[in-house]
Image 1 (cartoon, rainbow, N blue to C red):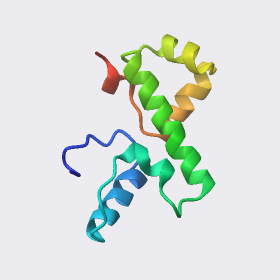
Image 2 (image 1 turned 90 degrees about the vertical axis):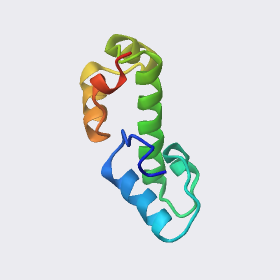
Image 3 (image 1 turned 180 degrees about the horizontal axis):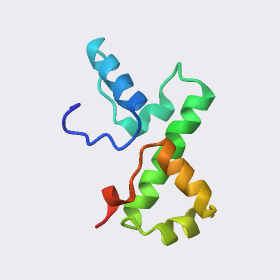
Length: 94
């Protein structure tokens, strides 16, 4: 399952999934990380933010103006968030 996911999020997401698999725990979709017990509020917020960004970028096929309108963010803020979550517009072009 690790190889079947394209891991558009950060390295921490992949590391957490690899650790769960190594420990023999059930693999969960990366977007479910916001629901896992034991994660701090900050980690859950980061995962939720990345999930929202990926969903909007996917829905709008990488159209940054549409994403800005939907999420009501300034351009600079969206750029910073995309960079923090290792999201590149080209990943979502449809």
